[in-house]
Length: 393
Ligand code: GAF
Picture (cartoon, rainbow, N blue to C red):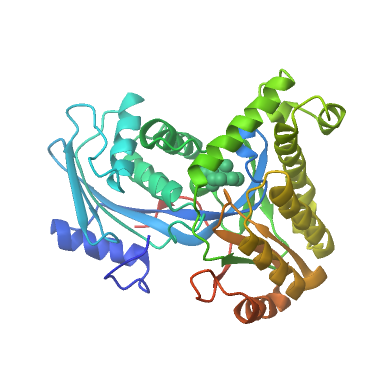
């Protein structure tokens, strides 16, 4: 979230506490945070039941909460000019007329109710610093923060982190109407400090991956607005389903590269290319694990370059400005790391993993050679893998 009138240099954890006290006149009973994410590799593989390798980043949404004696939910969004929403828990919670941030609150309540949880009335304040519209999962982190806050305030101890992620995703798909995969919610709920997380998006099994300490992660925002994301995303999903159906497989996870290669000329060209990206990128997740752990930057370069080319040529989700940005960073770091677009595509950010000593050169190259479409320099964030959602006060 970005702020119109708040001091965004103060951490969201401090702002949310202060904002809660100003609005409700009491101290919150607890404050939780949930981070945004950057995906290191494995793009669009999540809804094909494949593998992904994201890490939680040090940008987060925070929620301060206290219980009420009645059945009302009162919530203030500190980054949205202190806009407020309130509703009753006594009946099904409909989406708000404006369909803005409050639908995430309403959806979180409704999805928990549909699971049979009885919630008490709540006062809540929300503050965050995950850049919005950048492809760093600001909405997934907001939902995971809200559901974690509701879980802790209501002692829903049988709702573990994975179930929080699944519930958060259900809010997106069944309440807000965004047909996303499970990656963003999983990493926000289950991320581990200092680790990336390999996620098997079929079983939801997670494996922490420690990056070589000599490696740095750089996120660069292209400044390209993520236009048409939703319609293009849904279109890609359909083409992947079409490809899986051709093989009589439940998902592309169940189709091997050999089967795909043998089907060339029989399966229509577009679903074939989509499937080629998914099958190869899911395999690249597994290949990159050892390279990242051992700091083998030549291998990281090869794997990231192949991933980017696959997103550009087979999945067709990059843009010329994003391609340009990847090239600038890759040229600057040479064999000392790799760069690729990250996230859903059609704009947003690139991610690069490199030896720490070339980080300043990579940032300088972006500042010298890249001009975003709005004429401004690109924003660079050097980030460290962070902890997933939890209570902070
Ligand atoms: C978006 C979606 F929300 C994720 O589920 C995932 O598919 C990603 O795009 C692409 O890897 O962030």
